Length: 468
Image (cartoon, rainbow, N blue to C red):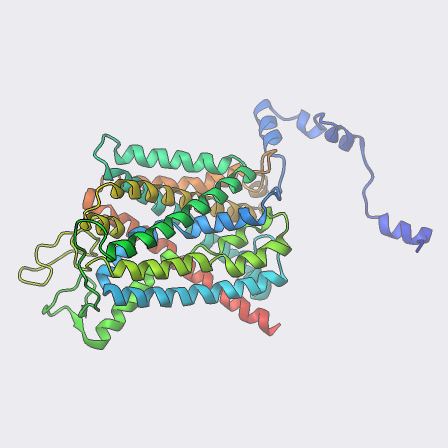
């Protein structure tokens, strides 16, 4: 159908005329504003002249980034703390309750993103359906939580390097890990997505291999004998299980409190599936890929975690002194008299108890890899969240610095600012062998608390979404 002259005039009247300055800028010549800049400022303007991300991530890249961020070090390290507190049955119940929470949140997010696949949906949903200020608050909390996740995972990776007797100190390990994280995120989103896709398959093979190994050890593989101790611990105490002590809380109330405490610890291990939504700004086909990835990606780590905690509880004694016991203050004559704590993975403990000598060192290397790749995803998420917040800021100097990308559409300024809290990882440098777990324990709380608030906010947004 042909349009009249008046309609054409109305349609195009808001398009500004092309000036000589625009032609010079498009041709690569410096504009008038750029000519008045100094050399350093002109260089910065040339490097950070864009304010948008590059849509280069396919579906397999998106699932790789999310899976790599979801499978970190929690199941390999803090699962020992859960078992030491709650016993095998209590740990399994805690993991079931945590998986139900994550399942509900992810289904809610998938439902909203299938209708509204926009950039930064975790910020957009409460901003649109609840309140603008709430959306900004969610963005700040989500950025802070992932910064703390990056720090805790860096400390965990550095901690596992101390398994081998060498001169590779904690200071060196933390420094090397932080440099690797920054370079991994600064390489560009397409190369980063390809790396995370490869990491996803390596982690899936690692999870599957651990399941087969736990079944084989339970069936009698290895010269050693694994203790069969599948029971619920008889009491609850925030400073440890002290049978017969006045501080212990026994009975049904003690078991409920024990499962509740284990659930809060297990929540850290199940978080990360929402990273799928963070990639919306760099996905090639967000309307097609994000809803499918958000619905089904998290089912793999959740199912794997439930199977692993069940098999681990069948193989490790929850009183084993080699696994981490929270707040060791054991009295003489009690059930835990003489037991000392140690920052070791319960899977390594099971393998050592089974008498298999070759695998513990290899598993420690796998855990270093898992922690570093998850920290890499945490830095990616925090930088993209900060970049989105900067673009929405009312301050022009924030938009012109943090809200800019280089010519490769990589937000280097946001990556650098999000990387700065990584210096907190050096707090664990002077921690001795048995104190490594304490910084990780504190940092995981700083991650889990804000993330639970973010999840609660997204559920509130989902309820408002349904009512609309």
